[in-house]
Length: 67
Image (cartoon, rainbow, N blue to C red; front, side, top):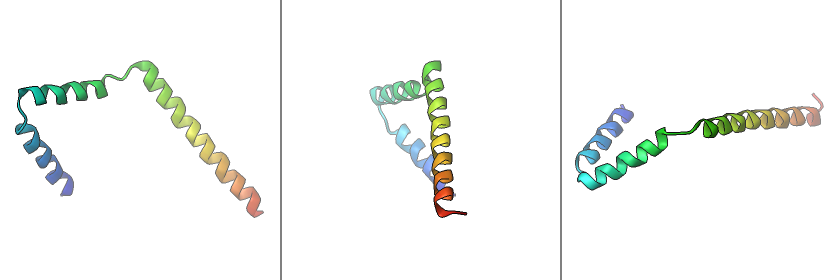
């Protein structure tokens, strides 16, 4: 329910914008959605690296505890 209210609030605030403000918002949204393949690849590698680091830290804790 809270997310529906938040969506309505966003729509209301977008309706209140003038033309130049609307264009700035659209430009910003486009910049977020136009992620290059290199950026996506980097994010994937970073995500995988973080998973491996977490796994290594858990293993290290497990070994130190002697279980």
